[in-house]
Amino acid sequence: MLTPAPAVVLPQACAATAAARDFLLSLKKDCHLLVAVSGGGDSIGLLTALDEARRASGREDVRLSAATVDHALRAAAAEEAAWVETFCAARGIAHATLRWTGEKPVSGLMAAARDARYRLLAGEAKRLGAHAIALAHTMEDQAETLAMRRARNRSALASGMADRTLVEAAIWVVRPFLRVRRGTIRAFLDARGLSWIEDPSNEDARFERVRVRRMVRDRVEALAGEAESAARARRALSQEAASLFASAATLHEGILAELDARLLTDAPAPARYLLNLLIPVLGGLAYGPGGAALERAMALCAGPHGARMTAGRCLLERHRDALFVVREGRDLGQNEIPPGRAGIWDGRFRIENRSCETLHIAPAGVDAASPGEEAFLPRRLARLAGKVRPALPPFEDVSCTPFLAPFDRFLPGFELALANAIAAAFARPAYPDPAPAYLR
Image (cartoon, rainbow, N blue to C red; front, top):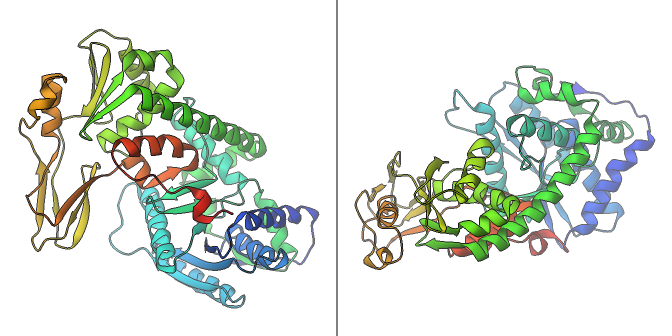
């Protein structure tokens, strides 16, 4: 439903204006920004503040477009998107409604909806040629996110949202309002007599975020401050882990990682950070093992020759002075890739089919280690590495490139240094730096 806002000027409304102005002034010349607008107070406030700041600061070279994602989960969603379109039209801002079509999952609906939202926004940004996507996450959102992540993972790796995140290895998502309170944004809208839409799900206690919101409402600023500290710590750890990876790791044919166990043991904090991202890269998962599994992996670095464990679909084995990490040889699955399409196999490889035939991709499943490898790698691990490769037809019009699951969908800005170090080892191009992408 629409919430009419009384035209009352409150001093704290200036904080939203200042955040928008500072962000606008950081953008490069002729930057095109896609703003995600649900119709709620936060996103309406962000769009309005950016539009005002654009004019007031002399940055009319910055172009704004807007998009609303209709998840097709509520009957009112289409009407709300139409209301946002009218709001944007009154301000001369181009608007698109992006609808999530197809079958919805029974479980994990919220996570699937989030992935669909980012995918649709990234696709629209590509269509428009936009340089970045702006989201209206607030200080409350930051505090809630940190609280939820700590509840799931109490290790030092838990953090809030990054102020910028690379989506699909192509477009940066930025959050200009992470230091702005939700009440401040409402005050900003109140001062202009503007209305917004209240989403009834924001009061539905069936959702984890709603329950957490009620629990942390008196600790928002403290938790947001802790989230900023955690982000700085993760950025520093990422840089240390990137240096450790360069000195301690050897990647064999994009399948098998060999790490100097002594160097990892001597640098436990960056080593944990490195393993928490390298394991899912090699295992084809979006998230690291964290918690107890990560501690066992660190203990294995100091373990005896022959000690082994599994984590994140990977086998970790101590062999002399090295820790080897390789994909387990089970649950590898099969893919069908139609002509002219691309697909992700096992979360580890992107296979593009430019042929005229449907590809049936399965694991090699045979002892496929090269003779040269067996001279300096443990034979059993080298053979396992051969088995967990995709079996590809000998077509020139079929390409296979590494897919780095923790980074290629969502890459928080504070992990960029380590992501680029790992990408280089896989002969992948560096991920886009935010500076030339959208900053001055």
